Image (cartoon, rainbow, N blue to C red; front, side, top):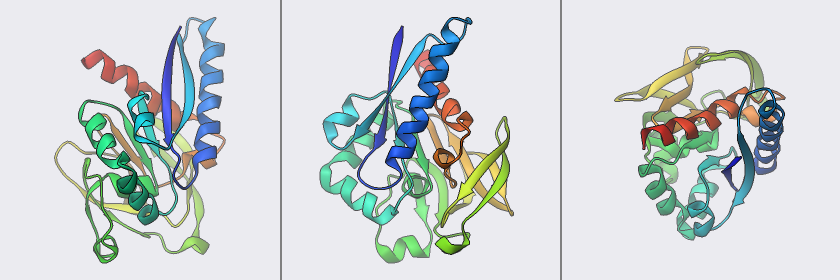
Length: 214
């Protein structure tokens, strides 16, 4: 049985929640083996150093404080290694703050803070698009082929516009809140804070799809 090593960037933010959800996905995959389903195990690991990035098959950049996460990524050398591995086809998923970091362009708030972006996806991001933290909420969304997903928004960003090969996966209140481009996935909401593992499972599927292309 093959093992997929999924890294969660563990510098700041919703790290434990993503690890728990990945373990849930792993348990589901294990149960499905005897039913003719997945033959791959899921190993969830924390990514804190450059060498950790080198050892994973995919990476999740969690929600948190995007400016802080960015500073720590560049100070540690992780940002450069993520960009390198991403260019080689490693799947990368950014949730909330992680979505901000994946953007090619930022709005005035991003520019004002001087925040660095990984510039991996063809979209422009707007920070705090749904208001401050006290205005957090949950809404049911159709995310690509995933129906009625319970999306949790906390001081969420939104995608202002996409171009190139970037594909819109979901909108809420007229704003783009999920997008996909090649081996990259971005969600403005927090799938790790729900009880629903379907978006995590969708991301895991990108690993197999990338391997088939090689």
